[in-house]
Structures are given as structure tokens and as C-alpha cells.
Length: 506
Image (cartoon, rainbow, N blue to C red; front, side):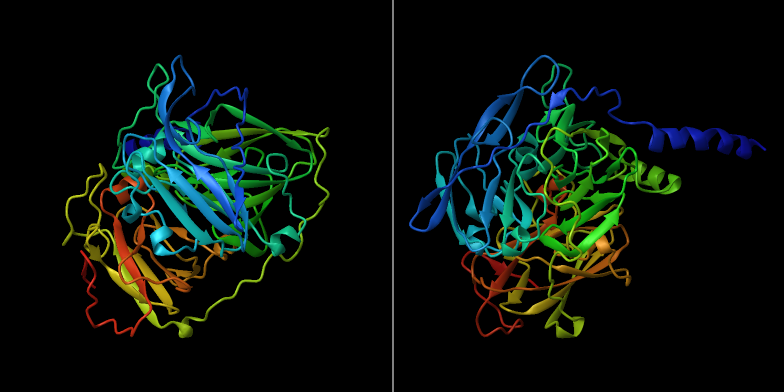
């Protein structure tokens, strides 16, 4: 009898706390959404040359005072870089901060020495020149710092920008593509603020979780869009939290792209989850001209949500994100329906794989130095990140299956540099249609085994590695990261490869 009474009382209370209560309720949505400016390049000797300058700033978000921030070419965040496949890209990155930094081109297929990892450190006052051809297909990429053990706080301070790629296929589809009008970038981040409006950085439950949402650096935002089909490019730029996006009126929308490119066909959905580092492109029909809230919903059942909140917080917040206000007066896009086909994706058969590589997330630590970052010490294959150790060696042009086994008590978004991959299965089940495209970051659930397939082409080095890591930034800074080389040589993986200043342990 007593238990029944407790259940009758507790279930509605828990339902309210986890599902009905909005963490950031009470917003008036009176601030116009800031749109990152497009960064204009100089055309020099057939190269598109962009100037990026990490700077310290003071930015007003809320409260009475400004917050101490960082940005690229401005006080907070950075401009949007937009290029075409086949362009020759150059970035001159001049560090005016008083700390070391790097710029990583997240999702991009680039030479390892141009990847912007801790191995391409930029000291205060130095300029780093990153040069590579744009080989990726049309997609929404991004750039952010990747300094050794210090990534989380620099991203938290504002060092984030979008990197958009177009190609002949995407330009011929008639998709909404007028930047800032019917093609809207949305960088979603969360923050904790002091009472006076200053940014507050502290770990809670092993990472950084906030209670205030910023969209493109705007608190309490609204955006006016055409009363027609509108493309939203969503980036989860938060340090740790996953989001489960949808609209307050539960309207259906269409996903058209994953991290690395367009899907083969549009997918009709009413919710989409993004873990830190992931991107998605969706097209929403606003021809009804009705204003609507973009939200992040709790995604699990009551019991799962309660367990998740108690364990790690990731992905179960209930937030209002952005008010979208369709305007018939804004000229709508000429497209009135999405094409049935968006892209051709070459898919490898698992039998084509030259190697299956197994990585275990979590478990006991067996190797690795103490990292300078503040996050928890969570290993991959028992090892914490070591700048002087190469963990895996890959043969150039090999097709590989990576088997990611999560033995930890919480989900981990796994990110690999250099390549885009295709998910084969989750615990043996094929991926959902929303994950059936090119990916570079993927959430691996607790006690889950996820397999993906990819090919390592174009670039190789015997001494400059790429990275793979958890994209919960405090986990990465705490050592949940490894290094791999792609080598073009007599590829005997059992033979030692001598690397200057490095060891190989596999």
C-alpha cells in the first residue's frame, strides 16, 4: 500500500521534472539572432586565402556586465568560411591570445600536418599557415581549437566557426541556399553565467553542462525567415550535452544531410539527436507562416531519463532554443518541394575491409601520463592520450572497419580525424535512416558496440599523426584520445616503425 502511494506521487513529479519542466523557461525571444558573417578571401595565385586571428574579447550576453570571451577576428565565435569543392584553400592563422592554441578543421580530409591538432601548436604571436585542396563534398563542417589538454575552455570561451562546402551536385538541387535568409546556420551551445553576466566555467559530473542556451552567441533569440521552405544547418557546439531537436508543435521536417554530406534522399522526421561535434541539415516548411519554437526535448522514457540524469546529464535537458518567425513579405525560395534524390553514396561491403580495428571506451587505465586537462581520466583501449605515442598504424588506401565498444557508464560521442565513415550497425542492428550518410562523429551508447567502415586515402605520413577521441571536450582533455598514422610504405603492421620522438604501441 505504501509503495503504491509513493509511486502514485512520484511518477507525476518525475514526469514534470524530466519532461514538462523547461530548464530555461520564461524566455521572451526578443533578441535578433546573430548570423556569423561570411569571411571573404583574397584570390592569390589561384588560392583562396583567408585570414583568421584568434583574439581575446569582452562580450555582453545577459545580466549587467560583459563576459571574458575569445573569438576569431571578433570578440566571440568566428566568421563562416564558405568554399567550393576543388578550391585551393589557405588560412593564415595569427594567434594574438596570451595562450597557445590551434585551429582544427573538423570533418575535413586534409594532410595530417594541416589538421590543426596539438602537433600544429600556435604560440602567442605566431602565424600558422594551413594549406590544402578542398576534397570533401558539399557539407557543413566547422573549425575550433585543439590544443593539448586545453580544448574545452577555449571552445567554451568562444573559439568556434562554421566551414561550409558546396559542390556541383548540391548547387544543382535547388535547395534553399541564400545564406542568412533561407539557409540559416545555428550553432547551439550552452553556458553557465554568474549573477552579473560573466561566463562561469566549472565541471559538473565530469564535464561542462550549462543551463543557458546560446544560438550563434545570442541569448533569448528569434529569427525571421521566409514563409516557405527553409534550410537549417545545426551544429552541436556544446562541450558535453547532447540535444534532441524538434518543434514545439511537433511538425514534421526533412533531414537532408549528416556530418559529411547530403543523404541519398530526404528523411521525414519530427526529432533529431545531435551529440557534441555532430552536424545535421534539415529543411522545414514554414508556408503556414505560424511562429514556432525550436526546442530540445528529453528523448528517453521516464526510467531511462531518471537514470541518465543521475548518472551523467548528457542529452536529457528540456530547453527552449529559438523562436522562428516566418514572414510572407520575405521572398520565399523558388523551390516548393524537395527532390526525391539528393546524393549518390558509394558504400563498401564489409567483406572489402582489409582490417577490423577494435577500440574500447572506458574501463581501467593501464597506460598514459596525467593529462593537463581538467576532465576525468577515461581511457581508450586502457590508455590515456600520450603525445609521444602512436596508438594505431593504418595503411594508405586500406578499407577498415572500426569497432567501437563502450564499456563506460555513459554515452560517448566518438570522433575520428581525416576521414568520413559509414555506420554499419549498432549492436548488430543497421543504422537509422537519419544516420545512413557520411559521418565523422557518432554517439556510442553505454554498453553498445558500434561498427563503421571507411577508407584512408590521399594523405600519409610516417611522423605526423591524426587523432581519434571522445568529443565531450573535458573527456578529450582528460586523456580520452588516441593517435594514428596513415603510412604509404611496405605496410607490415607487425614491423616497428621508428618515429622521431615517438613510440608505437599497438
